[in-house]
Image (tube, rainbow, N blue to C red; front, side, top):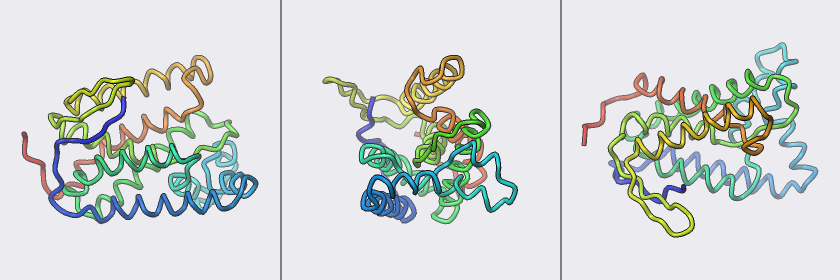
Amino acid sequence: MFPLRDSTPSRSFPVITVTLIIINIIIFVMETAAGPQGLSDLVYVFGLVPAFLKEQISPLGFYPIVTSMFLHGGWMHVIGNMWILWLFGDNIEDYMGSGRFFIFYLLCGMVAGLTHYFINPGSDIPVVGASGAVAGVMGAYFLMFRQAKILTYIPPIFLLNLPAWIYLGFWGLSQLYCGTADIISANSCGQIAFWAHIGGFGAGMILYRAFLREEPQPT
């Protein structure tokens, strides 16, 4: 299922949402310009590699928890994450304000990275992507705009207007299912950091209220 639009209009220009999208795209273009070897070096230095993180002593050594959320593994990866951020981030930023939203986004991404680390502490596979932070935005949207409608494309031909609580709830449950399945049998749902998604989504649900300037009105 792929979301095409939501029914919640923006009340103001989403400065941080747009800035994050631009930064992620610029960094990805720089990644592609680095060539295969340069890209590999970047991913291992700035991506989240749990086995490397486990060896760190200084708190400064934990920087990949932040830097990893600004790297991506391919065009579809970055476009998918940025589209979801654009779709849901503007509405969350509306009710948090730009500064609070930025901190919220980073915190959700950090919780996502730490969740992946604690589930896979010995993994030497680098993890990159904004999806953990974006999942936090989704978790906040799930509770704040549960009755909003999400126009959803379901291949090959279906278009459905789903309530946000159904679309995002199904997404969250699918991540939990695949994350649990991966613990039982490695890569049973593919090489995706499902627990980072779960950690980010949960963080968004738990933390969002602390960052609100105002509550959205029920619709």
